[in-house]
Length: 384
Image (cartoon, rainbow, N blue to C red; front, side):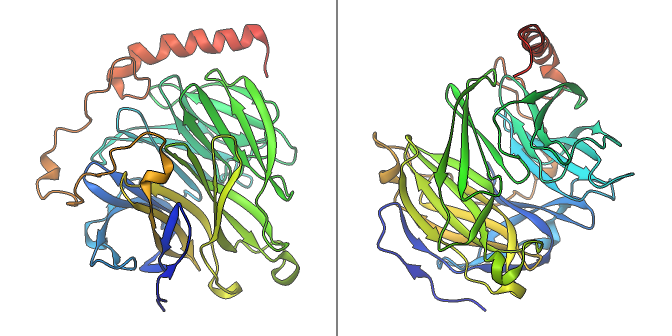
């Protein structure tokens, strides 16, 4: 049942809508702002799908999934968990996990064009039982693309790089991380950031240079009213403000094993000082959800998507974009027209920018030499 939008006297997030169930079962609900408007990627039937996400009115609750126009992106048939990231050239990197012999012992990578044509796929790991491949991070920047996987049973994390054919190139252990299951990474100019939880009240924040050398590591307090905070995959930056959507739950009342909770949004300045904190959902145990995600459209719309009681759901927030930037920003997003009728005749992947390491086959010559030099340097210097 929809509730009235909650008007808040806050500087950054000025209005929060009610949750909207989209009438489709699934997990890993990932709203995406694309060059053709809003889309929703999600896991269902042990594969990955994408469908147009439509505005149906002017209220914050006016959203619907255009399910008849959904596209099944994979035909694997046994994918459990998912992560998707947009590459600098506008294409998409998708990671999915599976269980062959032991729990979450396998992972697969998929590459899609801007108009959701599959460009390639590869086996990242099969029957690798010392790592857990669930709840992974898909990461795609100019220098490299790959994913993080924690050790199965130990507080250790690994980063696996992928070449342009989505085959694993190298793996190394990264020091100083929280367990990255349900964690997130973010590119921010000359730095990379990682956030995650280790069953502690604090959210751990780790800063790296672009060679993944650790520069800083610290905890920030996000816990509310004694609730356990976890799963911080909703991690973006707007202007000079970091935004994190994470889960929280009453473990004393609900137990520690159920995969459900409510969503909290926390905003920080560039020094990781708290700006605002908002509880976004207020569900009881039977109606609670998991796996929040954040996306901004470049204007005043901030969308949180997650699966509530295994139903794909979104929650619309209205922000004041001027608060996020010291200098005035262009806050007029392109018109949300939805996919065009002639999208099937699109030419496919756009031309990658010069020196982009995330392109398709055409980017191999740029990607591999840089990565081989970079990985070789890491080997010579020793693992972090």
